[in-house]
Every structure is written in structure tokens, then in C-alpha cells.
Length: 194
Image (cartoon, rainbow, N blue to C red):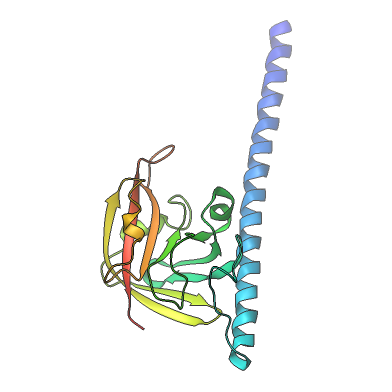
């Protein structure tokens, strides 16, 4: 009898725990979808306002952590993700992040954008040379063409340096299906085409 009561209690606890984990997961999905929607609405409003006035110029003095930078699209891979300023855990929970210290869109230099390999940047594993990447900001849309990909160690920040053909660099962890903290980084280099 006593074992039966213990099994009933244990099964109830497991069901309750599973329900709580599922509830947390669905709440997180809702929270992320809401952030993406609100950021896209802001970008659309700002872009419309920019048609009648001078477009907003993004730079280190006008942007704070968490601000919307723009929207990154890779049409062939069906990737569309909002980009926020910063690359910390909280920013990357809600979308892609502009890597601080790299160039801003609409300026010269190498723009660095990071996202998690198990969310928005998972499809990057199918990226091919010459795939188009679009980056829409309040100042307009820039188009890039993928030049190459590479796999580097996490401390190799030289991939973010300015160099010919490096106008946009995407960064995510590698391997894509690694469990835990991945030991490498998957890098995408792209050059501006218009």
C-alpha cells in the first residue's frame, strides 16, 4: 500500500514538472515572437518616417544596448531575423545581435552579427557562395553576397577585422548539433554588392 502511494505521488510530481517545463517553453517562444514583431513594427514605422525626413544614421553615439539595428534576411534559406545592438545572452535570446566594436550598417567597415546556432542561424550550415544577404535598417537596405565560410576557434576575433570582401560577417557556434557549449565558431563572410 505504501509503495502505491509513493508511486502516485511520484507520477503526479512528474506530470506537474513536465507541465511546468512545457509552459515555460511556450512562454519563451511567445516572448521571442513578441520581441521580433515589435522590433519589425518599429523598423517599418522608422523606415516610413525616413522617406519624408532624413533617415536615422546608426553609430556608437546614437545606439544603446538592446536597440533595434535592423532586419537580416537570407532569402534562399528563408532566414528573417531582427538584429539588436549587443551580443550578450539576453540579446541573442530575442534575435541576432550586432557585435559591439564592429562597423554599423551604412558605414564603412566590417559589420559583425551573431546569433545562436540552435535558433535563427541554424540554416547557415546550408549557405553557399554567392547567396544573397539583405540588411534593412532605418537608413535603407544593403545587399551582400557570400564570399566564403570558415570554422575558427572562439578566440579568433581577427575574422571581424576589416579586410577586402569582408563587409558583413555572421558568427554562430559550431558544430551546429553539438550538445552544450560548442568549441568552435562558424563564420560567414560577405561583400557588399549594392
